[in-house]
Image 1 (cartoon, rainbow, N blue to C red):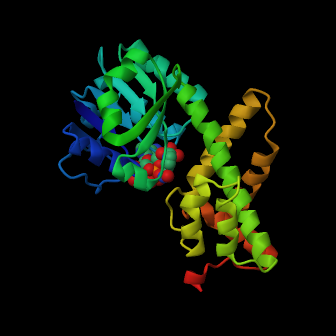
Image 2 (cartoon, rainbow, N blue to C red):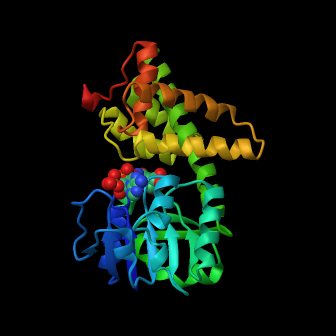
Amino acid sequence: MRVAFLGLGIMGRGMASNLVKAGHAVSAWNRTPGKQVENARIASTPAEAAEGADVVWLCVSDTNAVESVLFGEDGVEPQLREGSIVVNSSTISPSATREFAERVRAGGADFVDAPVTGSKVAAESGQLVFIVGGAEATIERIQPLFSAMGKTVLRMGDVGMGQSAKLAQNLMTSVIFEAFAEALTLATKLGVQPESLLALIQSSMVRSGVVDYKAPLVLRRDFSAHFPMRLMFKDIRLMLEAAKETRVKLPALETVSEIYELAMEEGQQDLDYAATLTLLEKWAGVEVRGAAAS
Ligand code: NAP
């Protein structure tokens, strides 16, 4: 298939590269020039990338970025035609997703929301899980693209439902990590070795994929961005907005949100969201350190 891939950040670059490896003709674009994907054509605008494409795939930061790539100056919209498909893998607002889909569909193309779960490593190794909203027939048509980039496609319902489900799932990621960070801080203050606590967590019913992924990094004090704090905070705001719109109360998430605000005031927005641990450490007057990092 001819695919325009827009957004070559932490996730997008690996995704675009896997499309190329699967034999698709990829025309890629990134807002800041200079990013390359081997054997892909690099376009200078979203419109140029989308010219003649069967599918336009987006993986940019947030709702505003998606809007500007689709409908802004040099955006994709004028290039869309009957039968082309826009797929958005950026995590954005469910209600804005429905508006964007309506506008795309008015021109005869179709829209699928397909935010992902999985890390940078999963994006690079083609192991992403896609959380999808849209028409079944359209999703069927782009199955080869999903297969090139991921291992699972979970359809949640119509357009917008992929984003809604993604927000609910990421709510758990953010709260589980903060629970882990608080447990590490308290255990350290009480004199328990972090490795001993980890062994206990992973042999009990609180074991977690979030802990599996983050613990080795945290214990090495490696807070470089796999999922930048600013993007997790963006998701937390989307969750709280969706909760407000639907009159749902999320007290644990509200507290987590405050921790993020304070961490970002300290300039940590471009670090991994795991760096929120350092705020708890500061308040407690301890530092969690694995034996390997000592
Ligand atoms: P990232 O590394 O920060 O990359 C963001 C991309 O969006 C870059 O290509 C950036 O371009 C582009 N962008 C930002 N603002 C833009 C704008 N106004 N117009 C056009 N392009 C714009 O982020 P990422 O980690 O790849 O995340 C991308 C999406 O996937 C986000 O919605 C995120 O929440 C979601 N996600 C990420 C992960 C993860 O583990 N990282 C996991 C699941 C979901 P520049 O290079 O010019 O800045």
